[in-house]
Image (tube, rainbow, N blue to C red; front, side, top):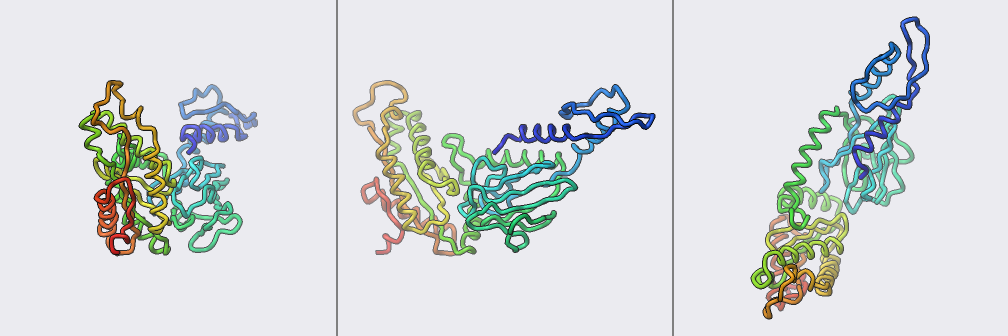
Length: 353
């Protein structure tokens, strides 16, 4: 996502490049000024400067349109729109409003804020389309505050907020993000499962889209800590997390569930597809060169210390009405993989046969 500072600067440069008519006490028109203004009090050396200054200050105080995600894992993410700006919505990290949902295309839609407070949305040839108040977006469609917007299966709202309100919301999101992110691995914490998972699964179920859970446990992790030290254990956790993120999609979610156990939530995946992803992760971990990570202290390695790392996984598709029961099924499949010899993946349906 483009830097907020750069977006504000671009807006201010456009604002200051506008031809603003100035009038002195004698009623004579004076050339418009194009001096860059960055929000500081200007020294008014001539009467004509007062008009420019007042118009700029009024523009800064004006309410800005704000696009806010109201469903899915990115709920509460938002992007303000400056006058003359075209905001892109999509999965691509370069979009001003990034929505990491599988139903959203990389460059899905765009909203433009034109003069006289006119707002327009256009679909950018997305796979699953966009709607305004349940009507498909074809070409450019004018929108207003309070309209219901959808990109793919993700809902948005458009509203007007002051700069002070925007900064307050941004601070709240920063605090939430810190609480939801594991500082060691960079994965989500269990708080995500408590706060977001139920709504996300409900939305996918309403769209008749499969969703699967994957549990992962690092084999013999206690032996890594006992023989190589906790620094090596931390390194193993970080590398496994990195390999997991390399193997799943941006729209999937990886959670550090506790200790050496991870959970992945895979939208648009039935149990067979989740099994294929789990096997890809397992093979990547097994084939990884672990020597540099296991000897982080640079000392002689004990004879009984592990020389490599493997993982056991369990997957389960959501087929019940209870989130807890579904996660328990995936967890049980993972424990079956460990009891079956480790370094393998088990599907929950395999336990019934």
